[in-house]
Length: 74
Image 1 (tube, rainbow, N blue to C red):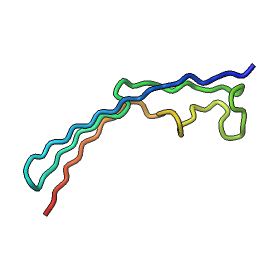
Image 2 (image 1 turned 120 degrees about the vertical axis):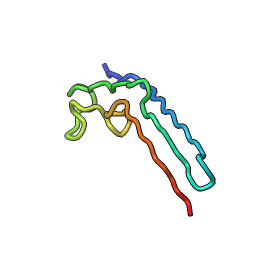
Image 3 (image 1 turned 60 degrees about the vertical axis):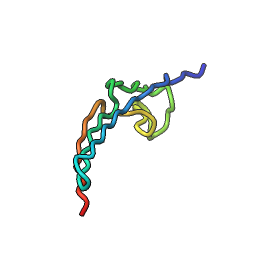
Image 4 (image 1 turned 180 degrees about the vertical axis):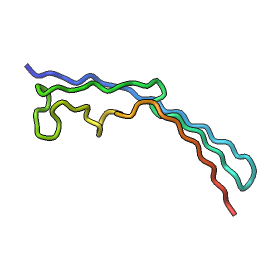
């Protein structure tokens, strides 16, 4: 019997503010609801690369994170 990995949805949020003609301020939140990936045991996807993994190419292993940036143009 084939076991399945459950689907997961991730939500990101970004806010940009034009402070002036030459300054752009950005705030971001990734994985806003802090969804954790399912840990896959050795009975799903048994390969040398994926046994006991969380499949980081498909699922977010880092959890919620925030960022900010300021862009200056001259």
